[in-house]
Length: 279
Length: 127
Ligand SMILES: Nc1ncnc2c1ncn2[C@@H]1O[C@H](COP(=O)(O)OP(=O)(O)OP(=O)(O)O)[C@@H](O)[C@H]1O
Ligand SMILES: [Mg+2]
Image (cartoon, rainbow over all chains, first blue to last red; front, side):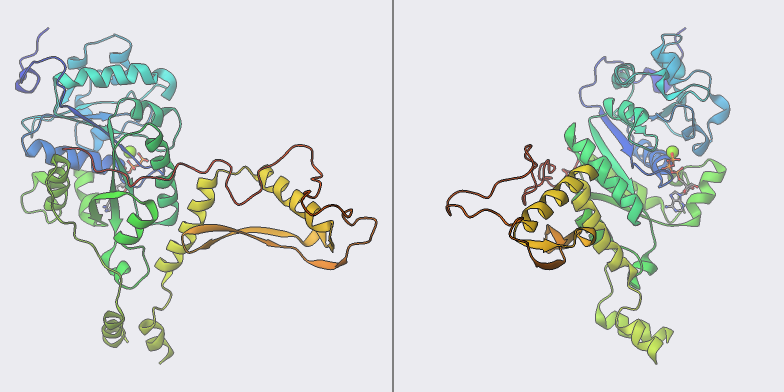
């Protein structure tokens, strides 16, 4: 019954008051919630925190795949909620890290298979195992979103610098402020060269429009697709150039004050240079 | 040369356009005014104005625009002429307000119905 995993036996105190329960959400689909959850979770674990990543996307399980843990799933969160298994039995430990585990979503169930109360209860049970619980929220603002938010005490809102993603992020921020909970913004898939030429909203623009506090900017990079294909979190590869980006977000989450590289809008002078060099 | 100038003076600059469009759409989103409310507002507005002048009801346009940091309602009401005496508002004492046609008051003033509580700057997660 009792499994002898080092991860599960760390600090077995009940009701870890300091556990951070963070929902990663966006409104719009496909903007990078799962990618961010996986890589940020890995970065936090690498920094020595006990981390549990929860896949709240019932019916569209993905987090396991992004982390390369898809073959090891036995139980899922709905089964935990229904009392068919113990919470610890459903946790899949990522062997590449000291202290990273995921709680998988059910793949063949409906979103309604779990209520917000059940969800929140399962998440609260994770305090015992984790310092950080990151909840990968499904797209939308319906059942799945409400469940994921019910389990959280703070939020990371992920957006891309595009109009529809930003509008949806605004909607989600409005809902989260009603709860209320602290919100930090992640801008994903930024293309610095497009910002420089004025063809993409810059970091300051997005923050201004959403009136939110920024915690990280992640560039649009093929490397992310590549590592996702292989199921390998970016922080695992010491030589990966994107490593520091997730590591810094992790440190900001810890409360460290690290400046964020922003990609300013073009000044007239830069445009002149740009026009001369490309023209 | 034109290409050069375009690049110099912020050619397509679609980022700026995106920002402007977003700021406007978010303001109307925050207003949370249902379309039928906007319709009702438009109807009553026309009623009031038609008491004084004859209005081309078919061509009335009501739009929202962003002025600096506030949302402005822009009404375009084409006037055909002075209202016929029968339709004109009855003379009354200056302190008495003109009668409102609809019995049920609709908040069509400058204040939005349920504007979202002024959003505080979302706080950084506590350490
Ligand atoms: N910074 C990035 N650069 C390049 N590709 C990215 C980046 N972030 C995410 N992607 C890619 O975008 C796609 C969608 O990402 P992801 O699955 O994380 O989004 P999601 O918000 O979880 O989607 P859903 O709403 O469907 O759950 C994936 O193919 C992912 O590899
Ligand atoms: Mg996802």
